[in-house]
Length: 97
Image 1 (cartoon, rainbow, N blue to C red):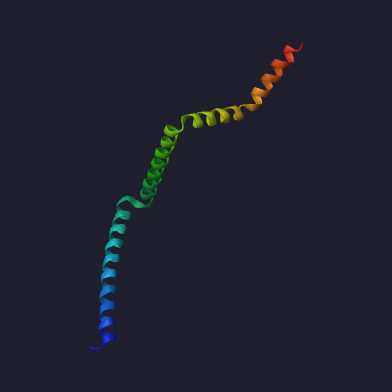
Image 2 (cartoon, rainbow, N blue to C red):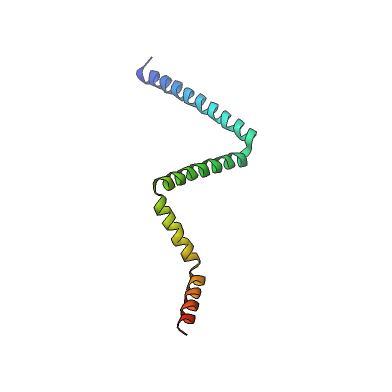
């Protein structure tokens, strides 16, 4: 048997092993999709990502509570800026009379 024939047989054997592994993985994915469906898999992934983000947020708050509190206070002040400005103007206007 020539060197190229041995190489070809070796390559075919490697291809067959890779195809068998692929087919096994494909069968598992297909069975999982049939069991839970695509929507179930998407929902599971979304819940997992939300948990990860929540855990990271908790870690940041635990490490920097003052910064988070100050940021939240600034956000509340910004959201209610118009009523606060109106109240200050009303208070200053009645104080000057």
